[in-house]
Amino acid sequence: MSEADFIIRLRGIATDPAARGLADDVAEWEGLVLTHDMIVEGIHFLPDDTPQDVAWKLVAVNLSDLAAKGAAPVGVLVGYSLGDDEWDAAFVEGLDLAMRRFGVILLGGDTVRVPAGAPRSFGLTAIGRAPPGGAPSRSGVRPGDQLWVTGSIGNAGLGLAMRLGQEEANETCLAAYRRPQPQLTFGQAVVPHVHAMMDVSDGLLIDAQRMADASGCEFVLMLEAVPLSAALLAVRPDVVDTRLAAATAGDDYQLLFAADPGAAGAIRDIAAGLNVLATPIGHAGVGAGIVLTHRAQRIVLPERLGFTH
Amino acid sequence: MSEADFIIRLRGIATDPAARGLADDVAEWEGLVLTHDMIVEGIHFLPDDTPQDVAWKLVAVNLSDLAAKGAAPVGVLVGYSLGDDEWDAAFVEGLDLAMRRFGVILLGGDTVRVPAGAPRSFGLTAIGRAPPGGAPSRSGVRPGDQLWVTGSIGNAGLGLAMRLGQEEANETCLAAYRRPQPQLTFGQAVVPHVHAMMDVSDGLLIDAQRMADASGCEFVLMLEAVPLSAALLAVRPDVVDTRLAAATAGDDYQLLFAADPGAAGAIRDIAAGLNVLATPIGHAGVGAGIVLTHRAQRIVLPERLGFTH
Image 1: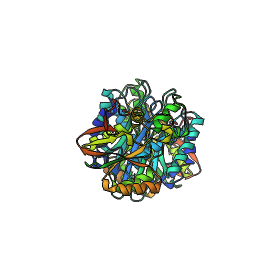
Image 2: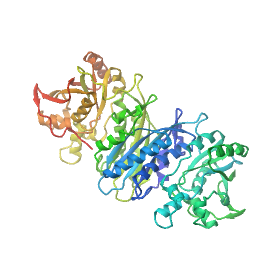
Image 3: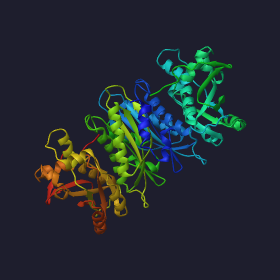
Image 4: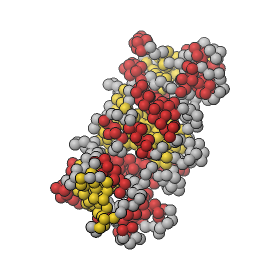
């Protein structure tokens, strides 16, 4: 069963409105935003990633879901598979570092020992306070909305290729893969202005398609507007293929959001004030699916829009 | 690193009072009680346990932690490893059944696909409302307190032996292993009367020792008072070895609690009203550790008091 098919089944039993039909990465319940994400060795991280990096990623991917709801993070519960002593100790160190960095407390959790040789998996539940106006969903986009993305896209995907020795390494891309930075502060600041928001974890195009589908809109995305970092453009030419690769790579943990064009000034001010890049990359219209353009030329969508699990 | 050593390290970074020093199975935060437990194939359940039973156990072991704090359960988030289609569908069915039985909603979660052949592991975060007077810890026992346990002890351990074909099966013990029943209603009702409460998951003796240690008390336990079911005594003679085996078997998910002897009448009334067995099994004194007696004779503690992970 694919993850999507399984979630369809789970939806049948997640009938409380707090669960948001399991369509939104988080639950919102009594002013709290709750999320639970797992990472598995060999799937979400490499067996030789450092334990500090694995711990960081476990915290960051969950807090990124809170960031996308404009939530202020509070605490985490961790499900941990014991490994060898050195690894475990370094994991705790990385967990501590990430929790301090993002200002969350360790509320609890559980540890288990998996059979020898089994891949290790870790789970984390993150709890935050919903913003005063409630957490935005991914289904609130309205035709005419401007579509925005924070930060740079594709750095982490290239960083993974560097980790695998397929590319000459540079620090910016490696860091994006190793230590993703959830956009918590920006998410909380921008949330009053957005109609919909989600984090980009599986690839910009696939996540944009999910938002378009959930909202019943068409998204027109300008590939040339997708923000690529100088670090990425230092090793890749600025051509359509580079931009398609970046827009279908995963692990960005940036925010994708939709807002009324009239909010653009306020959004730019927030971004400037927080020193966060926020870039308009297209708009929503009446219709369905993704239309991709590059310098006003329509581009055929790649077969693979990002990661599906 | 053992689970205990790892938790000692985690404690160093779980400095917020809400985490209760990771010493209490749950966190208490702003009127909520939160817990996260994992179960792993081959460790906490058998590869050929039915998916419905695995789902039930995942819910029940977490809600048992809430029961032990007198909390009213609200919702769960589930971390799920995908398997084959039939198994996954049956798991959802079991999850639904358990959630309906215990009145909790599915708030969210995550699904991952583990590499082929890897043991599957599942995590669950349960959230409940703390009782008005706050959640009791396991460290509040006072010398002179009476020690109580709910239900029968040892059924699930014998049920596991039956599942493994080591014993002729009977329904009561098999059901105790397959479908543990967290004592949620009794926990909420009795909580105003207890000084300390925890669930018995790793074995009555080891869990009693943990409560004695946490409270800085000695526990004197009368082995002959430990409640054994008719189903257990139908296949085992009522001798010291039978009682020691029951008191060191795991998976009971009964409640162990300490209360002033003056509260005994109220506790008996609550138990009678809810049709739950509640049995005094000893008392707390000044000192440390466990003293075990059988018909007023002191018994040497077995080397293994229960499961350690």
